[in-house]
Image 1 (cartoon, rainbow, N blue to C red):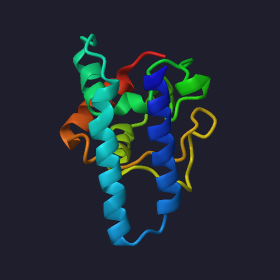
Image 2: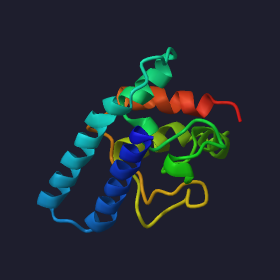
Image 3: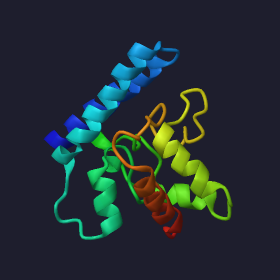
Length: 152
């Protein structure tokens, strides 16, 4: 319960900063990047040491499970929709898309736009923050490949 509440607060704060950060000057953008890094670094608070799948370990270590779940029917903190879309929904939506690997890796590394909320029905978050401070591009590619391979 405490971890879910802390996670919910951290994610809601991040989404607030993203909404307020649209059109920021570079100094404020740097501050936002530092905030994202701090949240990602704090993901060890939410870590589950019992995860034995290497892909899940990488996702956990990188802070992905703060916002995302794997299963379609997963709930976020306090029973709300997850902040980010479930990964099985991502796999289903992008099945057969030859550009999915490249485009989703770019979204992981650079974030998404608050103005283009194409997951609005499946998630409660405003936009995905840039994650280049939390995960390398090579690891992001591995995770995206794994996510796209998930069965529906």
